[in-house]
Length: 239
Ligand SMILES: O=c1ccn([C@@H]2O[C@H](COP(=O)(O)O)[C@@H](O)[C@H]2O)c(=O)[nH]1
Image (cartoon, rainbow, N blue to C red; front, top):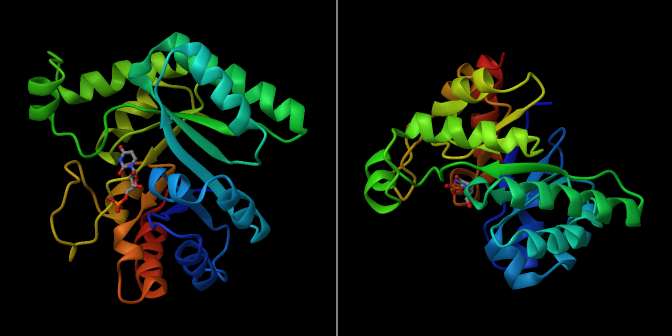
């Protein structure tokens, strides 16, 4: 399955469920709960979404000392989640700890463990910004490739980056390793905080295993029409 993952970046359960209900007829729907919704509503949003039968990507981008991340992931592991995230730059010990925590939580609850994704460089980061602000001295593709290798060696199941880097991610990892890609924009979308953007068709051509789309759907006058436009582009070029 190569999902379109709808980022439910809204601040109430009512808004989130209204969006999911509009998309209820779509096959294999996966939604992403990010910081805004999770901090506003709390873990009950996961329960409410599970009751609607959608796959859930809980994108909290954990970044802390390994012990803290392991204990936090143990809690998340008890939920039936498809995907969760950490920042790859938290390091290999932290990623290994995240994986251990997820497995522990899943075993306690008797559910399948979520897949662990590591964020490489946020899609809102440009190469210039990365070099100037993070003092990274290599170019952005090299930095993403390095963090991808580190993430896979530490046990992550995939990475998050722009689809622009997906060919590098796949070249650096085994066939089952996921390249999940936000920073998706339609030709008519206006410029915003995202820097490394591609269209759904470009993401498919580049080999993305799943695109994350937020505002192009959630802020569209008709989210279902926007979803179908994206689906059509994504599937017409999907390999
Ligand atoms: O590098 C990253 C990692 C995560 N995101 C998340 O994806 C969505 C994108 O939303 P849009 O409205 O389509 O920009 C959002 O929830 C981010 O937190 C990302 O954009 N880039």
